[in-house]
Every structure is written in structure tokens, then in C-alpha cells.
Image (cartoon, rainbow over all chains, first blue to last red; front, side, top):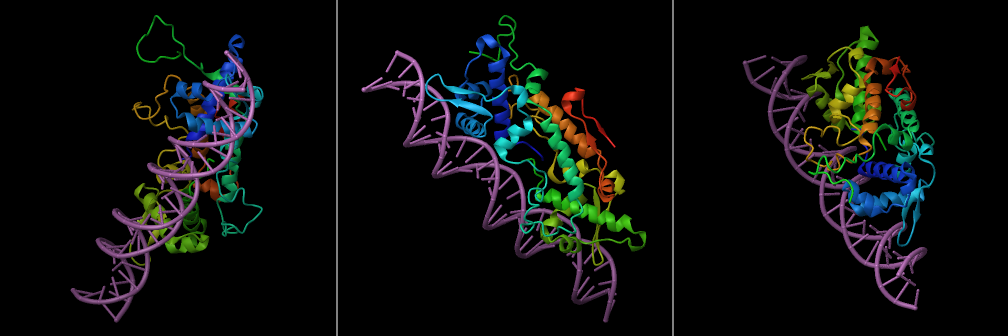
Length: 163
Length: 163
DNA sequence: CATGAGTCCGACTGAAATGATCGGAGATTA
DNA sequence: TAATCTCCGATCATTTCAGTCGGACTCATG
């Protein structure tokens, strides 16, 4: 219930990763390609590519073609909100159906006059939107360490972070 | 994106209607059946019946069989939160997949150590849950609910839901 | 007490959306 | 100039969801 789609998850992860590479360490700032992100998070390459294509079309990231190509953020991480990201990937986010149907009432909500839950739900929807719109990609970076690079000596087992 | 399912909508409408009949006017208090609600809101009878069955199984409403039968609220409208309703219909509500998978990490989230968006998303999820958990069926009846949400970024530990 | 109408209940079928995939076009480097 | 690497659009399976059907039970009535 109320779950994000896989595409949304992938998009968030990818953008966050790109931001970390682009702004995290200025000396290593570079363009990252789809394959790198996919391997980092163990997600299917082509699906992630599709998500990034959408984000590029929507102006969230910019694509750079050819060898040594890849993606980079179109604007600063602090200017990209979670709501913008989600809307770019999945279209307008709304809890109820009749929300974006207010212009043409003919579609489905035939119980327009009787509908008792519309008003309170719109309030909830508004609150959620504000919640997502007040959180930026930069906020996601600041909260948690992006890539937990442990020192090489401590733990050799398991998680190979970087290759 | 983030839309409620039809079942959730129908469940909310039905419970709200039952509550209004049961508590709205004490003189007319009675048991309402599925058909009445379905006709009132122009929704398929059998699907609504299925939703109400689920709600009955979960202890939100009580069913009364036979002629003159129907449904009534199992407890006071002020004791039923929207979160309870949604969870009863659609299972535990969570934004991320790895939320309810924390016990068995083997399932899908193989990028557990790398996952950078988990922590911030859990915060968002928490805020949404509190939002839905602080709103009762009685609030929906009263007209407009009094719910305000502060942004996450301002308060850090955030989730300020007050009424 | 027997009957019958009306209700809730569980399992089944069809459809839409999602997840995942493939081959092609364009651009850059050597 | 040629080869390689990248992004890009269209296509195909899978899962979830919306909707439907017949059966079991209960209570009012004759």
C-alpha cells in the first residue's frame, strides 16, 4: 500500500548516486554512466537506463553521449525535490482519482455530490505533497553516508564496495 | 503515483457512510447493507461486498447476517484511524520494499549496505503514517480535518503532526 | 416447524499496469 | 575514417488489480 514503484526507487538511487559523485568530492567529479550505477546497486541495467532517459527528457539530468559519456545532474542537488523526481518518473502524484479529474467530471466520479471522503483526502494529499516537496536530493545526501566505505583492513568479507 | 486503490476508496466511503448512519442521527440508527451503499455511490456491489468482508474479518466492522442484515461499525468512529482502515484492506502500508523485509534480508534488497535512500525514505514513510494515523473516521465526518504537517527539513526529527 | 427470501462469503476470470528486454541510431575517441 | 561505446525508442512477459460468479448461511414468515 502506497508503495513507490521500482522505477521510482531506481530513479531516486541513481540521482542520489550521481549527485554524490558530482558534488561529493570535487576532485573526482565526473560523468557516470548507467552501467556503473546498475552494478553498484544490483539493478537491471536496461530498466535503469529507461528511468534515466525519462529523467533526462524531463530536465532533471543531462545525458552525454558517446564513449566516456553518461549522466550528470541538470541543476544543483538542492534545487531538485523528491516530488519533482517522482512526478518526472511517474506523472502527477495524487492519492485520489478525482483529484486531477476536476476539470472533466464526466469520467468516473459520478458520485460527485455524494462523495464524502474527497475533501479530507485532498487535505491528506496536500500534506504528503508538501512533505515530498520540501525534501531535496541534497537532504538525502546529508542525512546518511552515501557509500559506506570501510577501511580495507577491517573487513575483507562480503561487501565489496568499489572495484 | 501514490494513488489509493479502488478498494481503499470504496472502504473509506463505505465506513464513512456506515458511521454517518450509525452515529449521525441517533433516531435513525440502523444497520446498512452492501446494496444500499453501492447504489448510493454507484460502485459495483460485489466488489464493495468483498471490501466489507475484509473489514469485518479485520475487526473494523461487524457483519449481521440474514434479512434486515448488514454492517455496523465495530467500535466508535473516533477509534478508527485511516491508517487502520488502509492496513486492514491492503496490508501494511510502506513506501519502500525493504521496509517490511528487514527480518529476511535475503529477498530482494541485495544492496543493503549501499542503499543510500533507505534512511531518508523511512523518515518520509513515518511522517505519512503518522498523518494517516492521526486522522479518524470521525474527523472525516466533521467536514474538514485539522491536520498540518511541518516539513522534514526544518525540524530534523520532524514528523510534526498536530491537530 | 418448514419454507423462502435475502444476506454474507470464498474462489474464479479478465484486464490494466508494471517490470524487464531487445535491436537500432547517434556521438566521440583513436 | 572506422570502430566502439553510449543513449534511445519500441516490444514482450509477468504480476497485481478490478470486477464477476455461484455457494453457504441466517433470519423472518406462513
